[in-house]
Amino acid sequence: MASKDNKEKTIGIADVTVENVSDQLENAGKFGKDIIEMAKKNRKEKDEKKLAEEFDELSQKSSYFNLRLALLAKMYKNASKAAAEARDKSLELFKKVESGELDAVGFDNEQKKLAKELTKNIDATRESQRTDAERLRKQFPNGNWWTWDNEFFNGITAAIRRLTEK
Image (cartoon, rainbow, N blue to C red):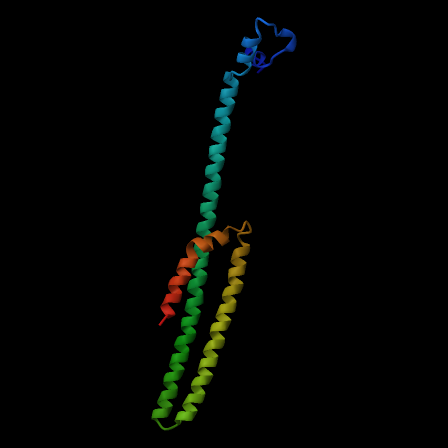
């Protein structure tokens, strides 16, 4: 669109005179309709791109949050199952004491074995959790998971730790 607007924008050094230099400079600084329309279009595109980026971030954050919570629930479910099994076995041991099949020393030895077994199961759950968490983080290679962990899960982790405090 090589219009009159564009000609007014370009200062031709040969066309500048003492009489028109001020007008030439003033006209060169004015925005033509084509520039204004282009700027409006660019602004709209920039705004839409920014909104799309914000939505993408929100979508990723939501996915991460939900997957991370599912992994957390899985970890505690596995740990809870292991603890429940150890409890059941402990009750069986006490019944053996009551029936005379097991004495106090035997009971203590078996309880120690149960504690080691439970510890082993919890450690296996923890290792599985670490592997799953690493796989989850690899799904978000831009590194935003770090921010999301700090934003959401530090507080959740602190609350869970309070559950085990005396």
